[in-house]
Image (tube, helix red, strand yellow):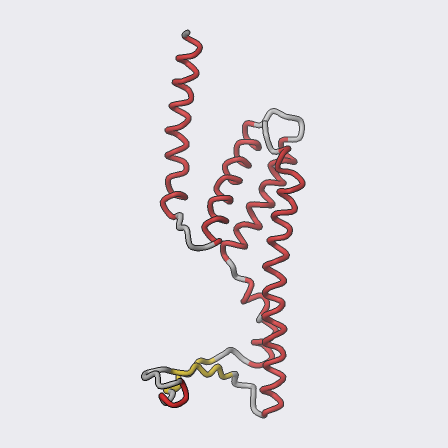
Length: 170
């Protein structure tokens, strides 16, 4: 009987500690975006990595903690979502940094809607129509690179989890 009471007390205390540990992540959670799924998953993996690294008693606890840490790093990159700046470095170097200009659009151009504006993206080194076409091609390539970088991190994250997650226990 005392063992059962002790176990229930331990479970109660562990539950309170979990509520406190998870509160910041849950407080920030929203249902409308994949970023929040990444944030919750990151928090779980971070807690598990710390536990296995510090308190793990199995033979390969350091290796497992390192595998989890690699997933946390990938999640940090996915949450930060800064693939654009890496993909567009060459584009901006070649054509100059983008400048944005808003232009009023007449209601006739937009099916009678009043107050609409058009965004013009201007690059200082685009001088001719051929430059414009080349810049547009480079822009599309940079967009593709951005997408590929993001997908590579997603693939590496979930492949690592697929291969290893069932071994991440102590």
